[in-house]
Figure (cartoon, rainbow, N blue to C red):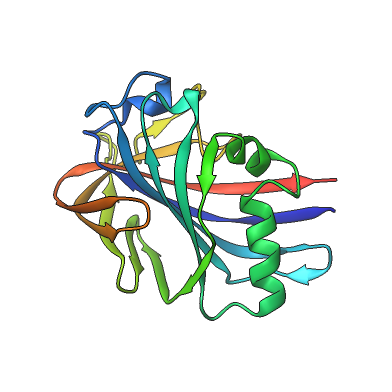
Length: 201
């Protein structure tokens, strides 16, 4: 049941910058329509090499993020092998323990995972996420006067425990997922970037 993975996160939602969920406050609209995607750059799950696998989740959060009861649709990149896909689903649904299991406890309804073509790029701070036929977003982090990326640390809620979150903004966020009940085409909303390293013995 052990795993060790590391990679990058892209996250975007319909809240203003910065999303109140990250500090435990209620979302700007009373609910939060969000997507988060993990690109695993290296690592393994019980001997299965997970390098290059992308996992994305589309979620409807009905109120305060810490109250849970999210409705979620998981998408696994179509290029992943069957073994990689099964391992990725186990990770995000909490069956492998560790930080991702803590996140899974907030899910009230998990729809049947789907395969999709997923594009996840991150070049010099500019991130782009696309789930074919479902979602498209482009985001870039804020930077301080020295050019360093603005970070959020020690927040009460995080999707990348143990790592700083890069405070970002999505130039556009288009999402249509009838199963979850989200249809959005908005601009200049909250986004988060970051790196992760997750392990479970």
